[in-house]
Image 1: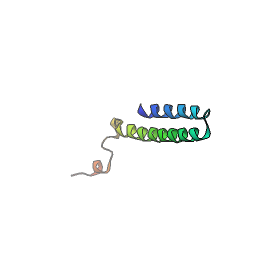
Image 2: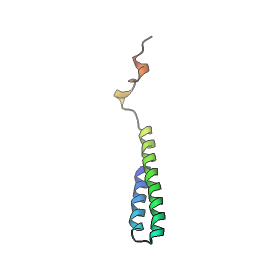
Image 3: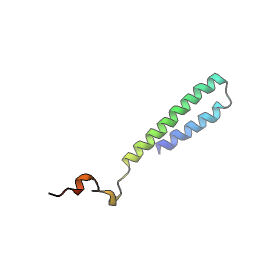
Image 4: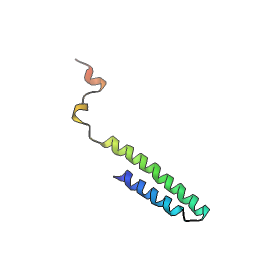
Length: 67
């Protein structure tokens, strides 16, 4: 999954940032935060593309209307 890859990259960047100068660490933290945000967005996108369970189909407001 893309979101897990982004999150893994963010965690790696944060570990590296702990051993750097303050300025470089600040930049790397900002980059890690960007990847965390990308992970959240990718997770939402993946969830939106997930298949709909068979029991949930037709459960919307239109399904209740009859002709």
